[in-house]
Each structure stands twice: as C-alpha cells, then as structure tokens.
Amino acid sequence: MSSPKAVVLVSGGLDSATVLAIAQEQKFACYAMSFDYGQRHRAELQAAAEISRLLGAVEHKLVTIDLGGMGGSALTDPSIAVPEASTETIPVTYVPARNTVFLAFALGWAEVLGAQDIFIGINAVDYSGYPDCRPAFVEAFEHLANLATRAGLEGQQFRIQAPLIHLSKAEIIREGIRLGIDYSPTVSCYQADETGRACGVCDSCRFRKQGFQEAGVPDPTRYY
Amino acid sequence: MSSPKAVVLVSGGLDSATVLAIAQEQKFACYAMSFDYGQRHRAELQAAAEISRLLGAVEHKLVTIDLGGMGGSALTDPSIAVPEASTETIPVTYVPARNTVFLAFALGWAEVLGAQDIFIGINAVDYSGYPDCRPAFVEAFEHLANLATRAGLEGQQFRIQAPLIHLSKAEIIREGIRLGIDYSPTVSCYQADETGRACGVCDSCRFRKQGFQEAGVPDPTRYY
Image 1: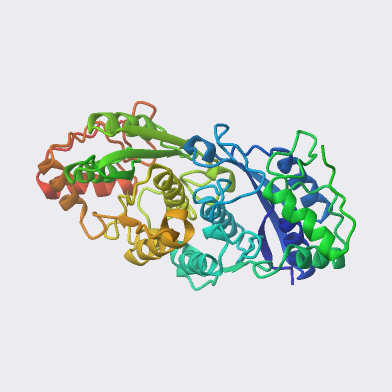
Image 2: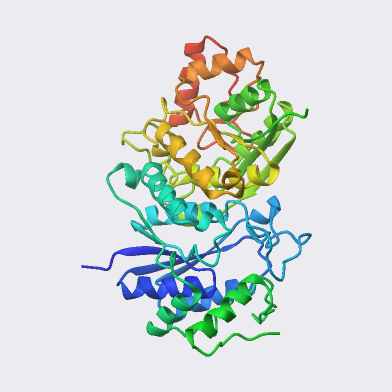
C-alpha cells in the first residue's frame, strides 16, 4: 500500500520545517506548499524550497498571491515598520486572514491530491497574539473543510494537524533535533536580507534565539 | 455617519451582479472583489469590472491567484472537457475549495477595510451539487471568520451574506430587474469567447436561459 498523502504548509521558517519532519516521520507522502504573498522576508521562499528538498517532500508548490495588495500588515506593507519588540496584544506583523487563506489553498490541493491530512506549523504559545494560531481556529477550519469540499461531502474526513500548537519554541527545537533537522537553512526573521541573514531583534528573531538558548542547542542562525 | 462598508464578491455573472445591487440597495459602501484564477471564461473578468462600475462600487479589486495550477476542475484544467449537461452529482466544473479561497481573501480585505459584511452570490438551488454553495458552508465560514481575525477577537461580528442562497434563477432575475439591473454585460457561460458571447449549452448557460424564460424577461445574452 502506498503512503497516505499530506499537504504540509512550509514557510521556510523553523516551525514549519519541524512540522514537515514530523509528517515525514509519520510516513506521509508530503506535498509541501508555500506562498509568495509579497512578504518582506523573501529569503524564506528559497529556504522553503531547500527545506522541502532536504526533508524529502514529494513536491514543493509555490503559490503566488497578492495578499500584499490589501495592506494592513507590517509584513506586507512597506509603510508599516517591523517592530523590534511588540507591545500590542496583536502585533502589527499579523497579516489579516493569512492562515485562513493558506489553509484554503492547502484544502484545495489536498482535495485534488486525495490527501486528507493538512499540516500547519502554527503555535499558540509564542504567538498568542495572533487570532489564527489558536486551537479554536484550527477546529473551526477543520469543520469548514468537511463542509466545503466534494471529498468531505462524500465522507472523507479532513484533519488539520497542528502538532506544534501547544509547544514552546525550545520544545519545538528539541523535537526537530531529535528528528535530525539541520536548522541552518531555515529563515524566521521578519526582515531577513536577501541571503537569509537575520536581524536578531524582531519578535520572530527573539523567540527563535531564546528557543535555541532554552533548548541548549547551538543557534545556527546567521545574523547581519 | 458614513455608510458601513461591505466586501462583495463579483464574478461577472448574473448572480453576483444581483448581489451587488442588493448590497447597494441596503446602503452599503461596496468594495467589489474578483479573482483571476486561470478560469476559462476570462471575459467574466472584464464583465466584473464593468458591472462594478455600472452599479456604483467604491472600488473593484482583482486578485490574481494560481488555483489553476492545482488542476482538478473543468473550469481551470484544459484537459477536462466542459460538459453540455452534467450527469454527476457534483459537476466536473466544481473547483476544489474555490469559495473557501474566495471568502478567505474577502475576509482579509474586509478586516483591512473595517467592513463586517461580506456578500457572496452562492445559490443552493441550481447548483445543489456544489458543496460550497450550501447554507451549512456559509454558517461554518462565518463561525471561522470570527475566530480567524483580529477584528473578530476584538468583538466585531462578521456576517457572510448570501441573499440568493434559496432563490431560483428566475427569482434572482426578477429581483435584479426590480433593482434596475441591465444584465447584458454579465457573462455566465463556462466557455464564453473573448468578447463575452456564450455557448448556450453548458450547465451555466442552460440555467440562465431557463431563468429568463421562467421570469418572463427577454434574455439579453449574446450567443455564439
């Protein structure tokens, strides 16, 4: 019997690389999906392609969408500065409806592939300010997925798998190390340069740096 | 007080033109949104722009997405023929997760605009074979919208408005005529030519033609 297929959202960052390794360990045939949505940190996209290849994804699909045309986030709108440390409850790096858009595309691809599992590296601990990183969001999307599709109508149960949702950054890193991931090609920085070097001061860099420290693992990140 | 804003999904077809007129009648400031997703019937997109202008939308945003790259539908995959009359329960013209993707983008834009109403011209009567045209799908998306967004978290209630969901094509047309719509620029055909002329034989053409007949309204469609 061939392996069941799964769609895995891969951003090029540390979290989704870990999720891809988890899905691979569970013997899924993994179809990696990334989005070019006008994000500032475009080095992520090259990292996403490299990680998908290194971790053995069957295919890596890059979907181009113009989410940036809507504005409203520091990650896509050049007129909003990336903060060095967030003070708001919901950071300005929140992109409106981003995970809903990503999961909608993943759902469409899963249906075409005949996959019933969709993996996403969202995390409710470090990013508690993002509404679309919470367990209730994941459950609501899973419910929607089974109503929204031909496959769901015909009895297939989609599963939205968010294996990192309750883990701290240090726990995620330890899990990745156990799975043999080399994190050096991953890019987490919100304002990485074109070679993937990180700023070291944005929220994402700070969570990552602290995670390596707490996990007791050498930080392979290249900073500028 | 200025009018509340609404995002209105406008495809260029008859149904969504009617929805836009309904939203305008309800005094919303309407932000029309269309998608270039590799559909065969691209004349729809020109129709969408024209209808948005004619009916007085504040803005018309065209979002380009490569849904077609996923395959799986006669509307986006040139290797699948458009049927003259569907025999399956769910037609091959079903595009996997299409309305989920469209509503996800609409939600993102609504959040940026500060709109809490999203109008969509889905219809459970003629298109009963499409899973994402049913009331349960609309309810599930509305539930998701309030969990997925900063605005929802802060107490805003999004409403997914599907005013045509229980109407027959003839009822939709009568409503549109009451609202003064000129349906001649609309394009419903799955395989319209580049000038917007319709085939007259696909499912969408047949429903439309029959709708005008039943409504007792002259059919303004140009056929090739």
